Image (tube, rainbow, N blue to C red; front, side):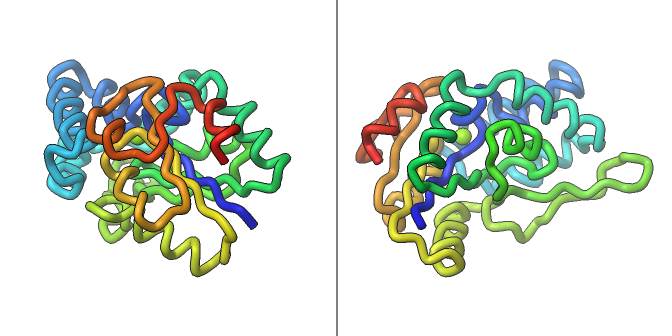
Length: 210
Ligand SMILES: [Mg+2]
């Protein structure tokens, strides 16, 4: 089998899920969270330095995660669905690897026909209130996506692995994949554009590369 891994936020969809969760809590929370996310995705600060802080500030409820789930689908990358379908038709298995939240990403994965989602679980109480997240999950920290790809290699024994993403955490996987493709259709980050062996601004541009 051949494995193609997609980042979610600012790659399969134009939004950053954590920023959208923050937006639901008002402009002051949104501004603070967005700055932290941007610094982490540009590689200025390690993701683990903001991961818990952002969630502690937001404390999202279950219905907030569901609202962001709908936003992901509404803001899907224009060529994503056709690209994933074309890849699957030529023998690729698509997986989403994200530092975002599994519950929020699931509707987009279903829309795209992707069954496997590697992302962070959030926990909620019976009344929908926030009860924490999976603090040990690899994508909450630097090098986490690289760890996830190594685990997928061991589990699935793919002949070829491709990773597509816009962020510094995606670029970290380049040493353990056969091809890393930087994506800059929504946010072209200098560090990724300079470091990636391939770089596209529309997801359908990956088809001739793989
Ligand atoms: Mg991203």
